[in-house]
Amino acid sequence: MSLLDDTIVAISTPLGFSGLGIVRLSGKDSFKIAEEIFVPKNKSKILSHLKTFTTHLGYIVEDGKVIDEVLVTIMRAPHSYTCEDVVEFSCHGGVWVLKKVLELCVKKGARIAEPGEFTKRAFLNGRIDLTQAEAVCDLIFSQSEIQNQIFVNSLLGKTKQNIQKIIKDIEEIMAVINLGIEYPQEDDSQNIDYLCVSRDIMRVKEEISVLIENSKKITPILTGINLAIVGKVNVGKSSLLNMLLSYDRAIVSEIPGTTRDTISETINLNGLPIRIVDTAGIRQHQQDIIEKIGMERTKDAIKQADIILFVLDGSIEIDENDFLVAEFISEEVKKVNNKIVLLVINKNDKPLKIFDNFNKFKDLYKKVFFRDIKDPTEINKEAVFISCLRKEGIRDLQQKISDIFDISKKLNTQDVNEGVFVTNLRQLDILEKVYLYVSNSLTKELPKEAEIVAEDLRNALVELKKIIGIDITEDVLEIIFSRFCVGK
Image 1: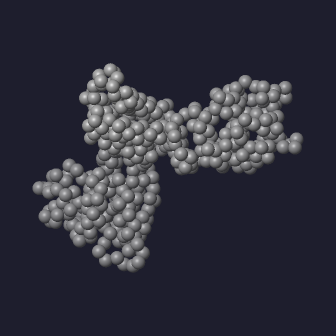
Image 2: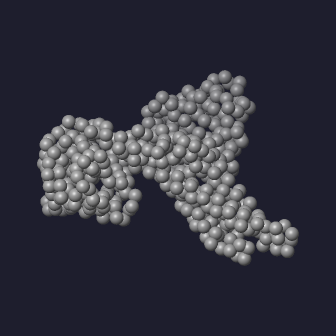
Image 3: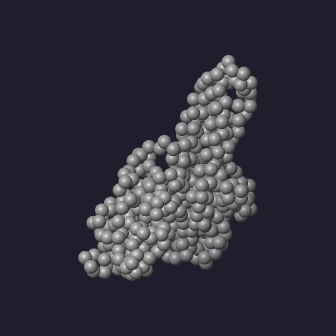
């Protein structure tokens, strides 16, 4: 584990030019170091004698020279973020000033903090569990109201409470099973209702199943949604990207194959962070090596996408290039059952000719969506018709995407408020291992195979405790906290 008997320091705000910037000290020598570089405006004050949670005006000084006028905030152990003595200097937000204050703290004995080390100390000192520590990092990088709500619930301990409840339930079941194993001849052991024990294990299994199911529903929302705009050349993919972004990001022209590489940007759509990738147009005969590379990158974008916008030109009939795109998409849909494909028909400002050869359109549709359609009216209900030229249909498309990933439709209000899910892939992977152990215990016969059941449940407990940070290895902690920015 990292040393907890030293004092760390970091700039806790982004470097740049701003009104304020914060330098934070944490550790047993925080007050001593602060007193060596800070002179209170009221010279009768001594930092180490001041009350906790108070703020004081003064100056950062080096060799009698004033470096900056600052506010200093005092937080005494254990009532601080790290449970250690903490001092924060609120400086003017110039790059030189902040680096100078950092340098002075290091000269007086502090060590520059590692990424996430303040939160790591809060975890190691028992102020928060590991799910709350991870929620701190997730909150910093959250991009939407939905993400913020979920991570705040975890920070407030909702995830921890759900995991602790399952831990308690399993421990109570194990206590009964172990009683029968260790004291088989005792009266209490003779009266154990093993049918009831099996039902309790089943109840725990269902509880874990709900957590896993809910967690998978919100995973795209927490990690962000990858959206790929795919189609043959000159169907309006780049124009659609510009419409979704509300500014001209991609070059648009009537020359086929203008986009030779993938272009990506991120938007916030009704609270959903969406990474949009505009891909190179697909056609049978590539012009050069660059276009061939673009085709491969288009395939990668399709593979990584949570949702694919399959763009067709509504002003012409389906051709061989549309079928080539459909082939690329169908290959991935076959591999990933939950990959979403949304049909977008562009150039709605021109006469609609895409259904003139309806049999050809039906074949294309079946290749991508794996079902037959009888007439164009079925397409009218599920496809989105747009005109990039007239900027029409964009709201319908945005609403359709938003509806697909609407968390309110996937989880009930109580589940959201109570945080009935885990909030990252580490926690979810562990939970799935726990589910397997508990499921495996139910395949054994009680009381005949009680020891094997107890071992399965014991393994489930070990894994569950890793979620909240009990008996977690230093290697895992390093991976988790390496995601943090320095200063948090």
